[in-house]
Amino acid sequence: MFTRLSLTCALLLSATAATADFCTDVRALVATAQAGFVEAPAPLTGSQSCRMTMGLGGVKAYHCAWEFEYRAEVALSTFARFDTELAACFETTSQHDQGVNHPDFYDLREYTVDGAVVRVSLKDKGALQLTYVFVAVEGL
Image (cartoon, rainbow, N blue to C red):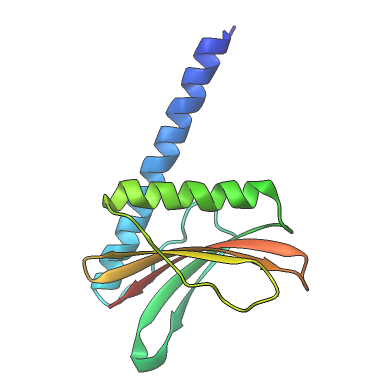
């Protein structure tokens, strides 16, 4: 039978493993971005969807999305956890995006790493009554 202490330790170990897995996954995406996305990346663990995009000038990016109920607390905590994990993974701090004139809520953190940019964003979609957390890796 689990005691409260052993249950707390098990939960902490599980969270530590999830952090390591997320960091490993994102580092692999960064390496793929540095190589120009010549091979299809694997989806980030737990994401509902991932897809490649091409921006102006042919810059490729890989976007993964996590979908939540509109303004759910778990969306905020997921965004905060990803931001914290990325900061630890790349041993750097994020740049905060400038505010936007948008009716729904939006927050973006950006990490510039060797040959790539990693972004985590939180977006409310009022018309859909959904909140999304996005992680994107873009080659430079």
